[in-house]
Image (cartoon, rainbow, N blue to C red):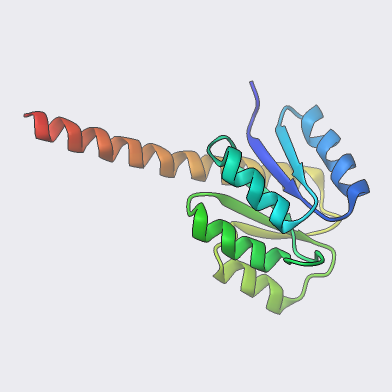
Length: 144
């Protein structure tokens, strides 16, 4: 069984392929997208299966912050880890304000990324479980 289901978003295909292989070898299920729009399309079709998005900040067209904003608007429980080689304090603050789970610099230690992904997946699962519990409580209270 997979540790977590991820969507990896980056316009650099070499990075995308290498990181996807490394994460898959560590028992993660990985989908990839090479743009913000492609990521949103995947989430629209398969969002219920994805737990964490690892999102590059600098991309042509729809950049990472714009993509993050749309992800959080359409999929509010989705956890997003911003990953960039061009970080500034301002972009990190922007990402966190828009709801990013964390912000990591490329290249980041694989152990750090894996730890953050596990934390983010657990946070999402916890939120989903609370929603299920609340629905069960609501249904059972109506039956009583």
